[in-house]
Image (cartoon, rainbow, N blue to C red; front, side, top):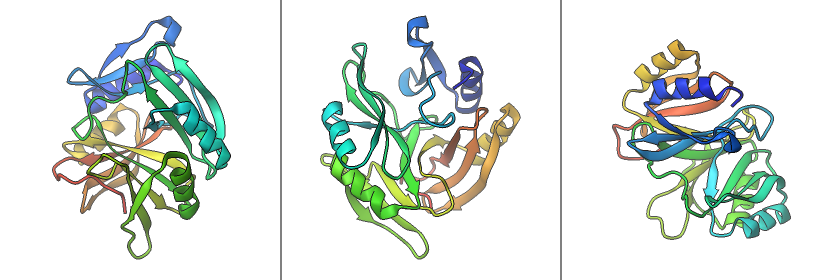
Length: 240
């Protein structure tokens, strides 16, 4: 983000985050905390064409996955590199055009809280190359899928060994640039959208009810897009 002070104020007021701000040598990397647990982070480093939320996918071997990703058609934008003793990361542009990161945990596993208000509740890959995206992530990360497509909307949930529930999704959307979308849980989608507008954000998609909760899309103060989802239902999304 080009202005971390402004970013911290926006997300603290919007999602109730507190921040642990790193020293100058980290670029004042700011870990967002929910109940004292890591939920996300803000960085002044921009990887991609514009400020955006960056989805990290966990792996036990970032270098090996990066090599498989390149063999499957991805471009390496950064790394693989050690981030002090916290872990090893790499940033890729997948063959469809979406930017995504890999994280091999060291002392930090990344997000310590999910599926709660203020925390991430879903991540999904959206593009107009639905089949190509599935093939790439199967080859690079070994993803398996469950097809839950409906008339007019292609969608699979992402399944990984050892996890009982889906961990994300891949959808076919013809009219949007390829990207990984991030959803944050909230208790009241409409109230949070109203707050986003007051704080300097804009509403990209108005709140609507779905079988998974009440959803809305927000554009933050730097043009970064993210989704809000009410957490009054036990299920996680996908959108559609």
